[in-house]
Image (cartoon, rainbow, N blue to C red; front, top):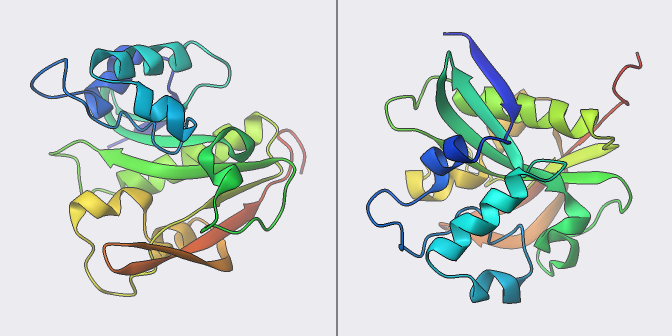
Length: 196
């Protein structure tokens, strides 16, 4: 399996990972809850949510990255400058640094492709995407679950072990809890693209 990670500019592929499975009018997240202000998120319903994401896919930078196994899209990670996310104003996630920070906060892997290391590829791709777009550091807010199992529906934020495997280190505790597990702020300093 040769996984390739690319910017999420193809809305059809983003829709495959994030879109509704049954009704186009379904009011699902579309990975907007941390990406847009709360009032905007609450104002979008049904197909409006997908239309909003389609606009994000046409902007620079793209709203995240997609993992491909050949031509098949198999995974998604949301990554964007923290200043343009709700993490910029979070009371539960501390700010360790202000300028040049990007956030990675949501992972989705298609059924049939799970437990194959796709999340590791997505995180590495998110790091490179942030670096290529001028980020000085990148942070995530995974659960600190130790060796305990995390329910699949709550594993979207990633685990501390996944971030540590990618070279991230714990920068701070948070007051955020997900599925009974504390979330921690994990950070990775980045050197500019093209430098050694």
